[in-house]
Picture 1 (tube, rainbow over the protein chains, first blue to last red):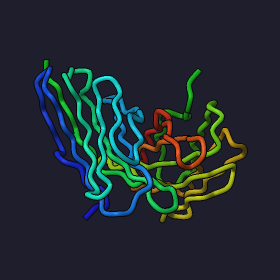
Picture 2 (cartoon, rainbow over the protein chains, first blue to last red):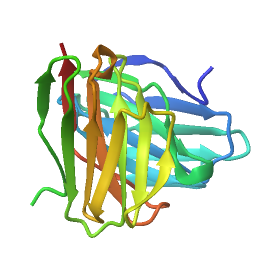
Picture 3 (spheres, helix red, strand yellow):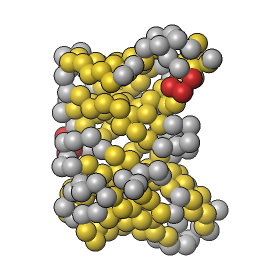
Picture 4 (cartoon, each protein chain N blue to C red):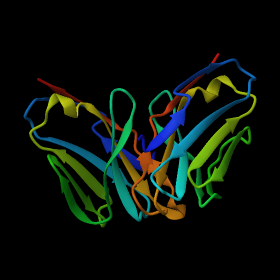
Length: 108
Length: 112
């Protein structure tokens, strides 16, 4: 069992729908990252958070440290949001451990 | 004005060869990383350097040797390439070890 589990593995939504991706982890962490990997392969950091909630445009990330759980929400989804979203946790030794990713497809 | 750059973007080579991948960042960061993304798209940390000092060295075959000539560069040399080394290798950098990381575009290595 991976230390970082994401669900769902794949998600298809219609344009405009609200999307939620979940991340659960089993280790103590100092921070959690959400990354976006574009179809072309490039990786972009979306959020880094250690408590509460962060918002950037249509993206919202939340974390519950006690429950060891984080969610990434996409409001009013758009086809350009189609990508793989990756959760990663920073634990002892400052290393990032990655989830398996959630492949999101938003259809027009 | 690319922030984190890697060369080459694609590398196709025969088993047994030795190859290097270069990474450079112009963000003024002091910490750099190498990650490997396998065929199942799973990312895993390989190495990390902070101020040219190795701080993370995961269970990686010693055929892989990182070298950081200065804070802006972290190169990855691979000896005696094997089929299982085929993957996409990402370089990243950050300011300190606790801030967000910026990723390079990746180098797709194919070993034939």
